[in-house]
Amino acid sequence: MSVNSENTKAQMRKGVLELCILSILSQGDAYPTEIIDKLKETKLVVVEGTLYPLLTRLKNTGLLAYRWEESTSGPPRKYYKLTEIGEQYLKEIQQSWFELTDIVNKTIAPKNS
Image 1: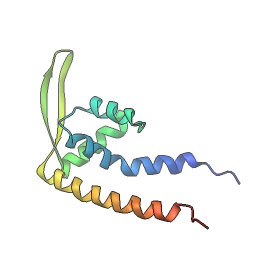
Image 2: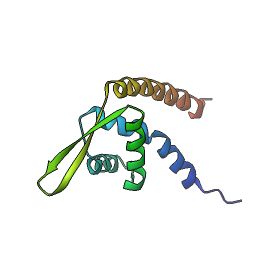
Image 3: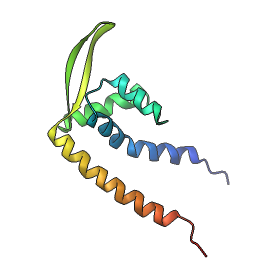
Image 4: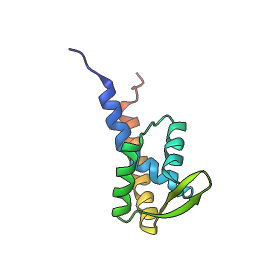
């Protein structure tokens, strides 16, 4: 039997993408290309086709807002930012993430004999 870990790795990355995007936006407003670049810096590669629907969903749930800003190098850019609700939500899921990673690390760590 051949097991491919790529699907599992992709599912894990997808599961933390929302947390990563909200964390990036907690550092300041950003437009989608900036978000993608910051994710690439951390080796979490995301394509626009994945990012845009997620940004729209986060906006529709009230976690993000956006504004249009003129660009000197092309069309206006849509800058996203966290709302107050988004900031509170981020704090909650960060806490959940830290608890989960602590539990997982304890579970998968090799036992000392």
